[in-house]
Length: 327
Image (tube, rainbow, N blue to C red; front, side, top):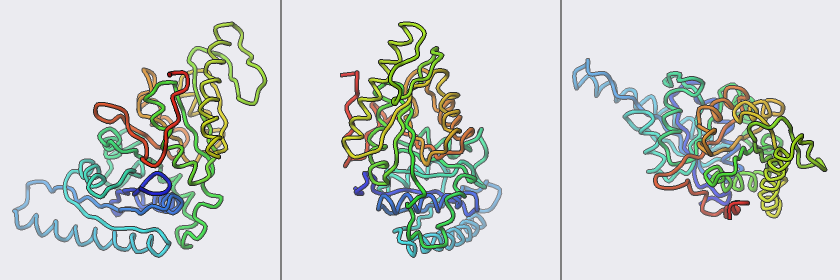
């Protein structure tokens, strides 16, 4: 288990510049968390139009090319101070990505939202989308365009990989235990990378905004005021836990539809990570929040999904904050 709460990150690549654009970002993340990287290439199954011997010949050549490129990537990461290993598998991309993460002891998957072999499904791409929905591990998604903004250190050895590059993490919450499963991961990232934390709760139907630094709520009705006070108290209690661990934390209560309001907030100021659970209530499906954030802001989005029979467990070395207001 890494000292930052994570132990190893898996990065699927397909040999294209698009998927490899994530490498500078991952390098900074891995170096800051002091964890190794597994770079993976999946050779897709060929159509049954060729003879068996011909298919094997093609597989062999594709494997040779993939291994060569992955070794180059791993060598560059290793030279930059990031421990890396290369793995090549064959099969359906999404299935092999999830399986490889399990087999190699990874507890985080990092992917670009599109790649040469990632046929678009909305903004995410079909492979990325299937991995997010099928993996029991957190998945970190980033657009190639945003990933490119972290590329300055890629050819300079990452000597100061996290200095001045990763600063902020935003955490949308809705008050449910499932939404709070993201908090141990936030602690792991913010604590190790010295990220400033912004906790956000959106209340549908209210017309006002209330920030933690304001002295009073400008609510028009008692019902609105009560809802705001409850939301503010909820976020403040979580903030106290984070501040007690030495993290710079503030919170914000907003009104409106979660996907729209959070995307608008993220557009005002870019964040290096937006972390959320894949479902935190009836109004928080992955498609309407996580995908809206990727589309509208291009900020990297960390999605924590529900495990079979329960909630996703946070990194083992991190103690999750209590569920404020729910005990």
